[in-house]
Length: 230
Image: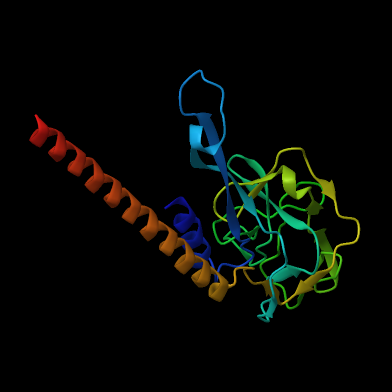
């Protein structure tokens, strides 16, 4: 059921900009069947599977042309930095817009940060807004700011909801990012693969349910037999 939940979440985010597919790691706990007696092999042990951890696939999604002035995608490694209520967060979702104050924000209203960690202001009356390949934002030829694009080791990153990430051991500025204006990065979820996995997991679930029903019937028969003997 936990695996099905992970798959369902992936499929629900198949069209979410910059989403990274999630997977589950299951471990097996083995213990001696007779308490303190040392394990003497499979016939004398009990095992139980459990969800050990979640992991994320950081492969890049397809870059899709949108033509939006404030749509940006990172071609290759790197993450945008945004100011969330809990502090600085990372994201690959480059679908940005401006709020009433002219601040560059995410669709959830979180400010997008520049290289210095400050908010980015876009003038209200701009004829042409350009975002260079290094993340430099210019309005009518005047440089305004440079997008804060950083990198972090995947094993140190954890999800924070809303397509955001926390880098537990800090980040480093990406010196030569490749930014594309007018593009966004698609989710790296492959719906066909997720459906195939869902069918496979559902079969395992059905098999497990059948085993439980068989065990329940066996216990009922034992109880019935004992009553008849008594």
